[in-house]
Each structure stands twice: as C-alpha cells, then as structure tokens.
Image: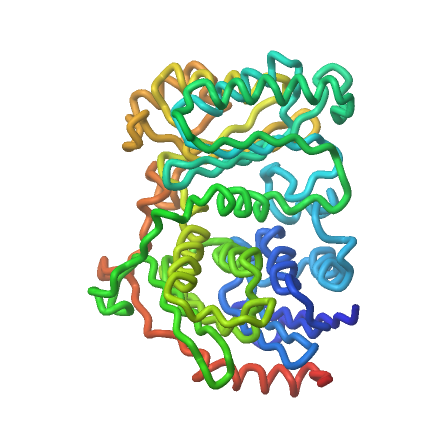
Length: 455
C-alpha cells in the first residue's frame, strides 16, 4: 500500500508537522494516530481529508514537554512505522531512552499470555486476581486496568513463573482460567455480566489500549453516559463533555462535534470509538487550546447506510463520551518503581486492600529487573483517599518504592481534579473551532507543499 510521510520542523516554531499521504482503507487513521501516541507524542492539531481512494492527514505534534521532535532516530522510526505496518506495535528498545525514563506496559505483546477480564468493579478485585495468579505461579509482566461507570476491564500479561516463558500447556491454561473465573464470580449478583479470557502469544494481537476500549464497549459501560445538556450554551466556559450529532443530507455525512477537556491520547480514544463502531472518517479537524479541545468529524457508516435514527445517534454520542471518560483518572496517583519479582502486583494490591484503598486505574510494566508504573486510588466508597492512610501504605510497601505523584506546582492531588487556569485564575477559554473555517485552507497548503496525488 502506497504511503508517503513528510516530517517538517520548519513550518511552525512551536511544533513538528507530520504529513501523511496514503491509500485509504478502514482503520488506517487510527493506526497513524496510534503510532504517534504510542511514542508519547502530543497531537495539538490535526486535519484529515479523504478524496476517493486517498487519505491526507496532517498532525501538529510535540513531545510530552512541549518540544519539537528533533531526535533523528525517533524521526526515522516515525517514518518507518507510518509506512510499514510490520514496524507498528512494540517500540524498539533503542528508542526507550529518548521517549521516557519510565518502563510502561508494551502496547502489543507477542511474547506473553494475555488475560482479559471485564465485569462489575468492586474494591479489592485486582488484589484477588493478582493473588490467584501468584498462587498458580504466574508472573505478571504487565497489567493495565480501567474502571468506568462501576465496570472494570483489565488486561494482564503473564508468563510461567518457573520457566519464565509463555504459558502454552493447555492444562495449565485451563487451570488458570478456572481459578480466575471462580475469583471474579465470587461476589457476583444474579444476572451479573462477567468475562474471563486467556489468549496465547500471537502475531497481530490487538493494541492493548484499543483492546481495553473494545472490552468496555462490549461490556456496555456507555449505557449511563450523558454529556452536558446544553443549558450552558455549549461553548461558553463549560468544561463538561459536549457531543452534538447532525445530519448533512447533501453529502450523506453525519457531522459530529465534540468539546471536552484536553488531555493526552484524546484523539486516539475518540477515533478508536468511531473505528470500532464501523464509522469511516472522511474529513476531520481537531484543535486544542488551554484546557479545552474541539473535534469535528464528517463520518459515514462503513456499510454505507445512513445512521439517521435518534436511537443510533444517541448510542454514538454515549459511546464517544464513554471513550473520552474511560481514561480519566479518578483518585490519587501513586507511582511505583522497584525490583521486578514474581508476586509484586499481588503484594502491592494486598496492602492497598488491607488499608481500605480501592484501585480505579492501573498501568504497570516490567523490563528486566525493573518494574515501574502507576496506580490511582480512592477510599472504598470512591471518595478521595486519606493522605494519612496513603502514608501508612507507603511505609509498609517502602517509601522509596511507592511515591505520591506531585504536580508541577509541588502539590499532591487527585488526577481528575486538575484544571489549568490562566493568570487571572479563570479557566482558559476559546472560540468554537470550525472545519469550514480552517480545514480547507490547511489542506490546500498541504496539497501544494506535499504533492497530493488524486485518484
């Protein structure tokens, strides 16, 4: 498949321009966004347009510190990953040092057995699962878990704790599956939905965070989602999530406008939802300023059918809101960095459970002898964790092992309550970003500079 990539550091003084011209197919936009976000790059603006069988994408990116992308090794990897699908997935080890000092769970693991669990969330669940795995002599190499609307989805990569390799024996896999089913169903109510699935190492395994979105979507966590009712006049300083969907009958599009708080990987999450719901993005404009982000999509269903019923629009809006909310971290963030050993996740989560802390989000990974990651915790009722309790937990686990995350101003805080403000103390605001005002001029500039090929 033809793909041409241009990385430009001269067009703008404050960001790197990544321009991609490629043959179009379903899901390719998500793959491109995935490549950039997996590298911890921040996408501040993006313009997308497809013309027949061709797709043009423009991304304004910086690193997580707001700097341009100048590392030659990283630039080369971006070009290769965007043009060759075989290079996408786990990031090469030689790039780890220029991306981040932390070890994170690999986004696509082809070396470990994957455990996927969805169901009703409850305090202590992660502790029970990890304890069961330790009892079965399974070593956790990575774990990611999200909670949303009282539901939980987690993906845990495991290996044989004695042989230090993937679990391939069908008898051992059946034993692990049976044990975990008994754990997650221990406190279930009649009719409660649960799912436990084990998959062997395989090439082509779905990206971990996309898989989490798919699991929660299948678990119908979006059912209770509701954005702002519009009484705030939508763009007038409200920081809640707004989703509006209108029909463009002349072109057969649905026009989706989203406004919400800006954060990392926001574009990835919304494009995930659209792609997995079988919608095709024909045009899009994404922009962020201050604390807020605006996204505008012109979409159609992949099968060509129009989704003009009220119920379909409501479901689409709910699913987009859910995709935005799932990654929002509620609770106090605790960072862990320690020696990698079997039973580590079980030990840490047991201390949390015994001290009345409930885990709302987990991201932990291992590399060699090192294990790092983050936990977000609340009290058992879902309220903000008491810092005295957290300090007792730190002392038991080890003060140098577990640290309370400190924001840039030096204060500990719950992640969900962080709102950037301007010098007057007010939430920064911006006018509505319109596709009609900016997209076409940007695409014309792209076509002139990049040599857009028409079909």
